[in-house]
Length: 186
Image 1 (cartoon, rainbow, N blue to C red):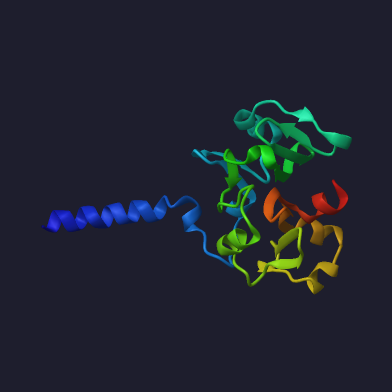
Image 2 (cartoon, rainbow, N blue to C red):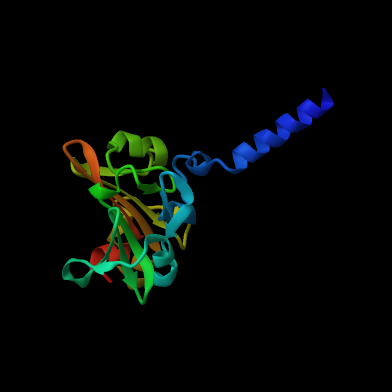
């Protein structure tokens, strides 16, 4: 009987520790939020801050995208690099069913699905076709619309962004990037 209790406790600990997207809490943020994972293999992970060579070990070789702003990879994943370091990740419609964010946001969901994963408290949901979350990595806090007026270079690099683009009520694109990449494409 005592052995069953120990085994049950050990199983519970393993399940909690390996919870994947379920280990995230709404209205919180961590560096893990800046990653995408393969839907059927969460160990295949691409994160903000990885080198191009690390990314390409997972996604294969990319090809130059429009306006030389991003690199396209198969399966609907695009990356934006600054000095060969991933500073922006985009999932487009081709990624549906293949890739998602580490928290579980994926193409085909709704804004309400995103709010259930990320929370409603800090969502900037001012337009029908988009929604954003901004997180200040230096001060460890979410930013509201007024706080976004600070466009100093330091502020732009230190702010992580999740943006979803919506078409016909469903998410068509998901961006994870620093603000500098999304504002200046650099």
